[in-house]
Length: 297
Image (cartoon, rainbow, N blue to C red; front, side, top):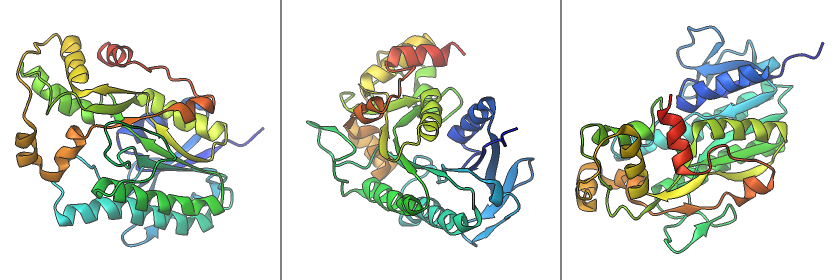
């Protein structure tokens, strides 16, 4: 009888990690999660800061999925917070690379990345071949991806530049739903700015697809790009709430959020041609289809 493939997930307790764990198990994989507080079954103790890890299960690992990283949108980007955001991604990835030496069966690596790595150019649809931008997020993603690239000397390495993840269990959708729930549905900023997005189910399917097709390289994990106004209006429709308030001015967001306001004010369109040419088919490739699925649950 063939031995179960074993997956180790860093960041497995987050929004994507929880859903991905379920998908892997349904597919017949054995799953372990790296955790700083490993009290649950299947959790493996680690601390990238102190470079400590429980080595008990490392020799079993075939596939390493790295989703580790502090939340980009939770806190203002002070100098201290920026360092935390960088360290939680780059340092943890470098530590994973160190302990990969204790994974003799490692045959595939998936590294999360961000789609906010491109320059700001509203007249362009960006592909994976385009250069990094020069702002904070672009620099963060560049350093993060360079750390992941070190795995390419060991095994095929997939770097997914993940867009806004649509889920009914948290993340960006919670923030977008909150004002709509209180009857304050409106565009944020000009409303004409494009947001790349992906349904969480498609993201998990894409990770599985990459592993099973042995994809190597960098791919945009984007289902579609829609304007902020279209997205907010769609959410209001499915929540059966009004959508009539005037746009929230950009300067107000910048006043309260500082540099972090770029997460909702940046105008970004990104191509998904590369992953589709590799054979991946999106289940939710239109916003209406994705929102209908999310709000029906």
